[in-house]
Length: 131
Image 1 (cartoon, rainbow, N blue to C red):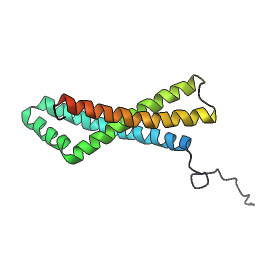
Image 2: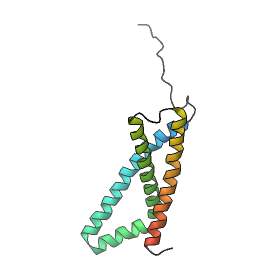
Image 3: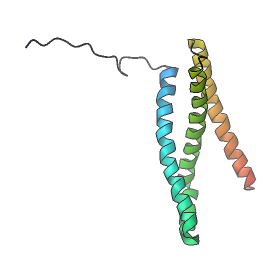
Image 4: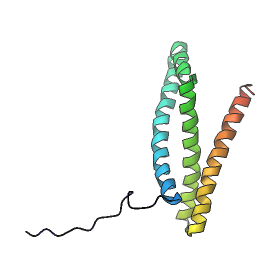
């Protein structure tokens, strides 16, 4: 049987990275990160239901430097996924498919993510009286 060369589909090593491809990849990654972060939230809630000793342990873990960094990254993923999801809803409605509009909305998602994450953390620390 003769072997015919099969056409290959372009892959990530062929394409030049673009904002639209990066936002798509990050949307998927933040979805995975949110799922993992939700498991930590469930652990925290179960610890709260189990009593003071379990809750204190959970608070120690989540309140550590590493825990706060992970919580910051989780909130960053949350706001990114939220804003990019709204962007996808606009696309589903038929808006923003033109390349300049896609780039504007991509940059808006990135800027909005940073602003909302920092705002949430500043307000959270202000509510605790840390500022």
